[in-house]
Image (cartoon, rainbow, N blue to C red; front, side, top):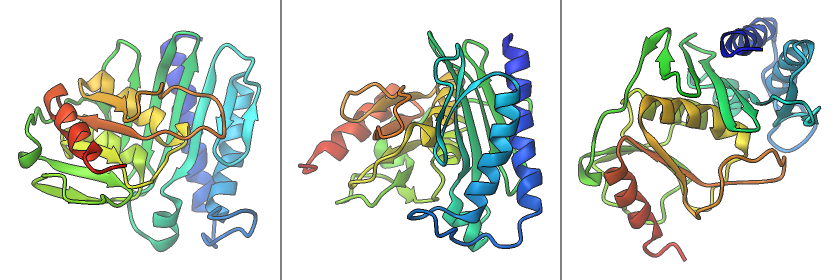
Length: 249
């Protein structure tokens, strides 16, 4: 499958999830495991139907690993920001990222409230609704608007901050210059489904992404957790990482 075909499958999976959510009446907790919502289960089933029919492996937040031996594995968060979704906050997404032996290959992140779609392919740039995006270019933390997952233990020197509740969309906001940076902080940890799609969109747009403890961000282990930082420029990223490290221990 070429990159164009792969993107078509990822977009089709996101559309199938939207269709499934449209038929959902109760968006509350499912009672299956902590913080798992009915929307998560319905969306996961819809995504698996499309991705497995395309003979792709899947690593899903909700149902785990399916066919990780396949050459291409799609890491999927069916509803990123499901608490937002359950409360009617219009900032929740589907995130899909295809991974092969060379790394991140293709990604689609869809704001399932607004319908805005981001996508990227390795070496092919990043787009919002078909138009290329680029980060803000901000270089100084004291001029930056920073998004957080988790609660900062102290003031890091930002101009302003936001905590929006959907990591995939937060990272896409860095890619398109809506946010200048993003950090997972204060004890928060993310699974790879939370950030890989947004990470590829960020890097293809020209932003920079690192793991705060120096670990690889690409993992297909369901139990792994990471703390990604992203910024519009290397200068801002360095300043943000240094500021977060002060007193972190």
